[in-house]
Image (cartoon, rainbow, N blue to C red):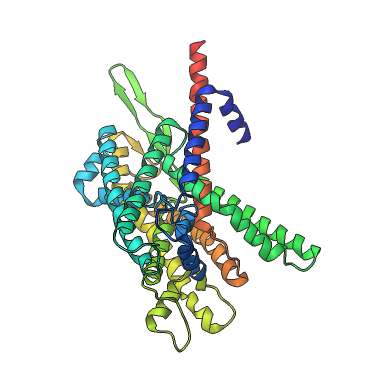
Amino acid sequence: MLETIKNAFKTKEIRNKLLFVLMGLIVVRIGCNIPIPGVNTAVIQNLFNSNQALSFLDVMTGGSFTRMSIFALNITPYITASIIIQLLTIAIPRLEEMQKDGEDGRKKLNEYTRYLSIVLAIIEGVAIIIGFRNQKLFTEEGYTPIIIAVVALTAGAAFLMWLGEQITEKGIGNGISIILLINIVARIPSDLITLYNQFVKDAGNITNAILAAVIILAIIIAMFLFIVLLQDGERKIPVQYAKKMQGRKMFGGQSSHIPLKVNTAGVIPVIFASSMLQLPVVIASFAGIQPASGDGASLIQKLIKVCNQSSWCNITSWGEFKYSLGLLVYIALVIFFAYFYTSVTFNPLEISNNMKKQGGFIPGIRPGKPTTEYLNNVLNSIIFIGAVAMVIVCVLPIVFSGVFGANVSFTGTSLIIIVGVVIETLKQLESQLLVRNYKGFLGN
């Protein structure tokens, strides 16, 4: 990896692309610290300190949400719009045809994604501002601060969407993913300081402090290695192509394979599951309803506590531990969405038909329906393995947080995004270096 980065900076063209990405990320971090005019940021800070369930909103925005900056919405509207459009291509035949039309169809779908992103940004901005207005968010009365805040949030989301596309076009890697990566990474130093103050600094003696530091580092490194294996793991299904006579020459007879990734759905199932459980908590926070337990708590407060991730795995008493039922619901949702998302993005029947048209077949499996059934069986097994691995990665930080009280913002979702984006960006960097070397060779 270090050798790849070193070689990249030796090439002027790639070095300029990397510098463009760096400048774009600097702009992102500056914007995350510019507050919206007329907003009392202390109100947001107090609200987040009193309700840890809202911390997941801050992770994906790099801390800009607690500051209520102009980038508070960040790229979340664009990510949501991309997922919606991708799912709609399965349900709407016209969009499915666009997806198959090549570059022209892709440009049209990207245009729809941009429009939908703006609409979602306006809706989310209005909902957030109205929700926080009841908490004395604005320093002035009237509708003017509300309008300014909604316009600022929408403009910030639109600018980051544009910047992400510019990084994709003129830089290295996927711009939207890289912006999401820098937002998550920006929160890690403060989380490490929190872990140090909580477990190392207050350990009591030097032996306990060293032991705590070693355990924390070992867990973090082990999780990163496990995620790397999960991201790179794939099942290769061999495909043999029959020989064909065209004129006086024989074509075909080549061997290939279909790569099926173990983590077929990526981080999408975790995002869906987390969003479904945290949405009631966020809405309740806007309405001033706090999660609570005990005889005096209402049914709504108890249900919110079940959905509240910070309430899971609390072993202090059975009365609190029973709210870990939400963790079981979370695990079930992750596995369900892993199967659901893969089923709408991967079509074994289409792959089987394409193989048949091209004269390809899986050794030992007849073309047609048997090939489709074989691909379905293999895919179902892989999805389950990948979903279980995702659950392990996502549940471990929750367990440590509940049992040991480790109050950190990064989760298994954050780690998966970090590893996935870094690996994908390095692969693109290596491919551009390879193309550059080919050009140099041909030029000589």
